[in-house]
Image (tube, rainbow, N blue to C red; front, side, top):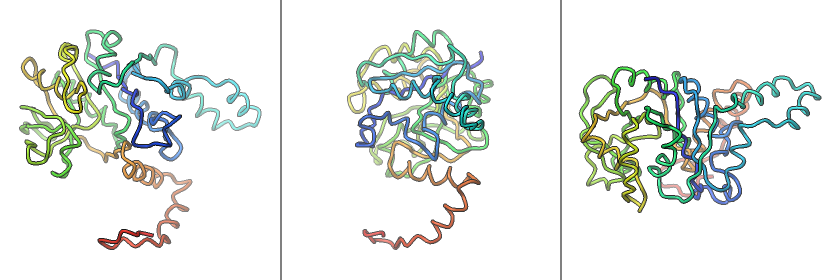
Length: 298
């Protein structure tokens, strides 16, 4: 059973990045010179995904246009003989039918957004990628997970250890390690307080799910934050099927957080030969006081 489809929940309002996201989809915020969503889509295609399913909301037209043809721009680049840039622009547009859009008409949580894609996904396992989680790795995280799925044939979530005091930001696992980088999940809880967390092993934004998950998401039970949580549905799935966590290889940046977004820009920029030199010089000559307890850091 090849993983051919990937769901991208992109209906969020991006309130943590206001006012920048007042009239701009948060997924279009650039890391260096590519929007966050493009990194995630490229990861999916690199893993062999054949169809991208965007679950969108209002105000996402720029995202849709980004993966479509722009004849005026292409002609301008062609006339100016900017062939390399023209080639990059054309590569953004996959073959017709590769990208499908559906709407989440009201913000009811991640679980509800995935449920909105049920008729397009159909009765087959599928991937879910959260673009806010940008992961720098030699082999794409989704490729790593698909390799594990080929053997485990069950739901898999990407996981990482987080500081104990941050468990209230994530879905947290109660799990037992069964082999290198793989744990079998015994239970999970969405955003527990540190004193209630069963571990510090957190789910991050990459999943491979079996279609059985739609049965539980369809119950539309409200969880943390008054929303339909994917974590709650996955915990119910444990009564029917095994669920695994995969400790991926790579460095994850939380681009839904302002500091994490800036760190991602810095990390990815430093890998670019065309700007690394200028950036390194700037960093070495910055006059920041990073001493502990100093609130005025410039």
